[in-house]
Image 1 (spheres, rainbow, N blue to C red):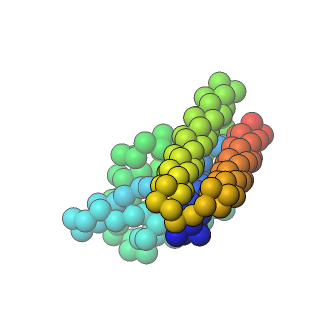
Image 2: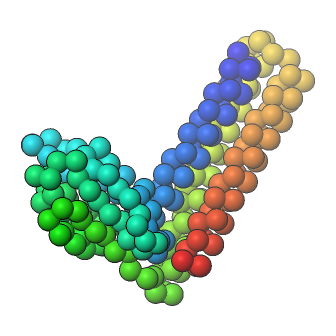
Length: 185
């Protein structure tokens, strides 16, 4: 059971980090990134369809996303979905492809985005700490039920703490990288 507790804690912390990475990828840092469009849903033949499933997204220039739909008839639907999304970008439709030009960020906007990155990092750390707390509670219960000794409990708690520390460092590292990307962008 105790190895299961550690493994479960590790898996849940990894999931928290992955969610954080996805959130970071969706933040516009002033450079073209196809992940910006991951959450865009297009109303396609009456069903919401992810944009990434119905088009090819390329980056021909550092500040341009080029969207080439697999079905040319969906071009207008894609354009409407992009306008309706909260990306703050205006699509340029030339009849065959859609171009999204990512504008240069102002200094003030860079600061706002950096704060947002910090907020997301704190949310991810809270999620990791919650996983840690659950694992520690599970270990205490195991010890109380007599399934593990106090020494085993302490050793396992140290392992959980190490996993937590590693996860927190990873989150900080990702946040620092994103802040650097934003300030240099």
